[in-house]
Length: 253
Ligand code: MG
Image 1 (cartoon, helix red, strand yellow):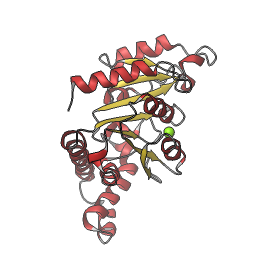
Image 2 (tube, rainbow, N blue to C red):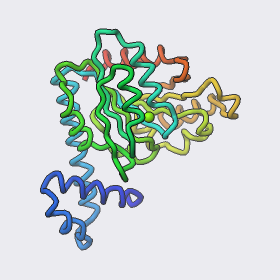
Image 3 (tube, rainbow, N blue to C red):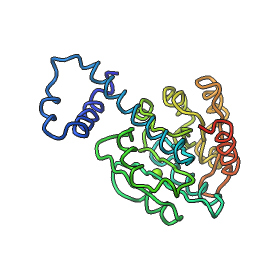
Image 4 (cartoon, protein in one colour):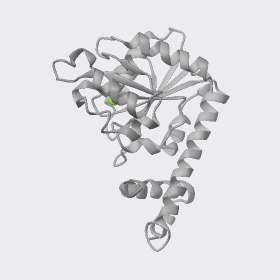
């Protein structure tokens, strides 16, 4: 928990502002005499409650299927979502919540594919959380949506502790990150449901052994399915899409 202290401190400030308004910031920010572990647990718990409420509203109340994509900057999360959107039935209405530290590059890419996008710039935050996603969800007309994709901020550490209410968390790594990327991030693999090894087509060129990556996933998260994709040209996307659909039918809620 200590490694998260700064991040949680910022998250805590924002949460307190949400709950009580800006006046409580000063008081809360100087609470070093109190039990900080309890404060951190409270903040995490609050975010989890918000994520659960998002899940109830989106998945249960409005029957919108909801998948989160996580992974490093440049792993190919946005490209994967683009390829999935291209394969969706034309009558489907698709929304996306796009988390990035800054800018609207990904939001504009998905909008060009006809997706309704809420762009969330997190500034100094390295992950989305239940509060940010709850605010973003409020921007959609959920009754008209069939599917909601949530793209987290590019990061392989921080999102582990912050579920967002999706039915499945898809962790995207790419061969260009090195074939040791899986075992370097065991907690995030354990916090997710599906693994994607993207840029599989250039594994040889970048000296990455995909079998090693698969072995590491099998060791760290034995139940986790692994899909090899090339998000740029669509390779492997059909299998991933079929799995996500199958998952959704097997675990509708
Ligand atoms: Mg992206």
